Amino acid sequence: LDLSHNMIAGDGCAFVSAGLRSNSSLQALNISGNCIGDVGAQQLAAALSPNRTLRILRLADNGIRKEGGGALGLALTENFTISELDLSRNYMWEDGAQVLSSAIGGNRTLQCLSLASSGLRRQHVQPLFAALEGNTALTDLDLAANSIEEVGVALLVATLHANHTLRSLDLTFNNLRDLGAQYVAQGLEANKGLTFLSLSDNHISEHGARKLAAALKAHNAVLQTLDLSLNGLSEQGNGDLAARLMMVGGQLTLRHEPLRAKHAHFVNSSWHV
Image 1 (tube, rainbow, N blue to C red):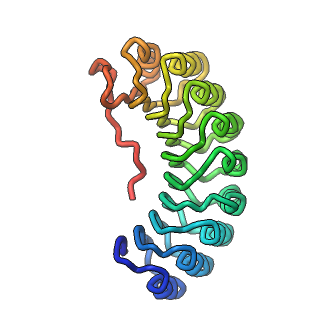
Image 2 (cartoon, rainbow, N blue to C red):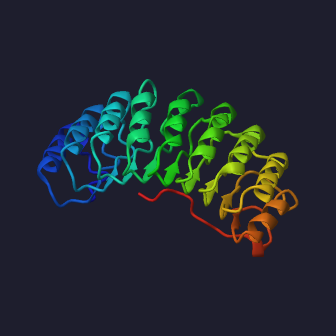
């Protein structure tokens, strides 16, 4: 059921939530772009606990903040059917990071989660990444367009070492720079799960690319697609990466940057909603 961009707001969300409580057939619900706010998110959260059929829930761009995010986090500790959840473009992380992160750590059915453009900053990531270390269900995580930065991504190293379930990780536009790329490289050294990684638009230079190349060459034969587009890398700078990825059967994604056609593979890395 697609109700996106219909000006439902909090009042209309009350009716949707009431329907979810008794519905036993609906499997996908999209109410993105409806300004439901914290009130609407809390109403939906209350409806999710008894619901046992909904699999996909898309709540992007709804003005959900800490109260709504916390309520949804608590609902995820009781709901065991939601497998895809889109919370992108909702600034819910201030003071609400711990509740949502704890829910992610304990949930065993959520497979795809988008937190893109959700106001996630470096001071918020510790509980999230710690929760991911013990998660054995999540396979697709979109953290694009946040402010994780080098300090935040340093905490990702232990997560990538411990978690072998995650297959796709999008860190596009997080101001990681070369030091952040180095931390990611350290994480890749022991990771046996990731097949897709986007580091697009992160101000990574050829120095950072070399660190990634060394990690892939020496330790990682699993990663298949690495997106380094919009980082200003020259063809010489990404040569080692391209060669390594071709050796393991992977593809190097470099959109809009000079790379020989035989190495280029264009991938839309966005999380579809």
